Image 1 (cartoon, rainbow, N blue to C red):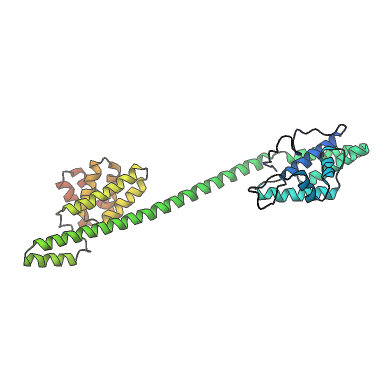
Image 2 (image 1 turned 45 degrees about the vertical axis):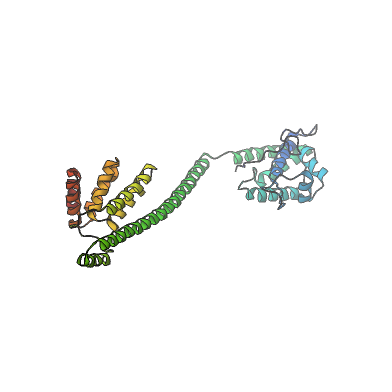
Length: 333
């Protein structure tokens, strides 16, 4: 297990460079270093502290149920702490480390093994010292990183990052989709307003008989014109060019898929075949050839034959025979 650890202030009571008292034996030094590492995990639970901070020595001693000078001797002197103190310290360190998403550097069993080794060293028992050496060796083996576990952890971390990236992209796509739907709704309203204005203008300029015919046409405005009605007004051309301008803006910002979605929905739901042909011509004029090719292919494949033929005729009359042939070939599959 690994710990991210903290960086204690130099000169503090947990300074990693702080010297042990003269005469402290190696076994006790190893135990003291482990205790210092666990104490570094302790942090203040004061609600006024943001992000937590390492405890002061007096605060740590009070929390661990001992005096400050006694805690100092456990960390830096010959004094070997009792087992219940080690268990309290380890439990508190694990709890505080978990808050920060970390693990403690040493398991409890290994910590108790260091204490056993230090006690044996103090007593001078050769057998205990030998067992302490074996325990230390086992501790090193336990703490040694496992290649398979490390590789698995890297894979898991890579998957977590990938999931986060995919979730972020999905949220972004949903936001773009919502914005695009709003733009399509706005475009529908714009086209409806333009057609209503055109109908009013025709009605105001026509004679009695022509005015009656214009009123009949106005009542049928929600119904799209049939392919045979290929006369484009200035208003119709404005709607088609507005659609192309919005698609060009999306394509220019690197969102070609959204630009194509806008074109596909706009031409099939809002525009007549004559207006759709104008969209293709405008795309060619603005050098958005990929969008034009994709729109021709999908329109020819998905729309009714009568609409496709009307678009092909308009393209041919506008001097785009290659595009006219392409939309017919798309219709034939």
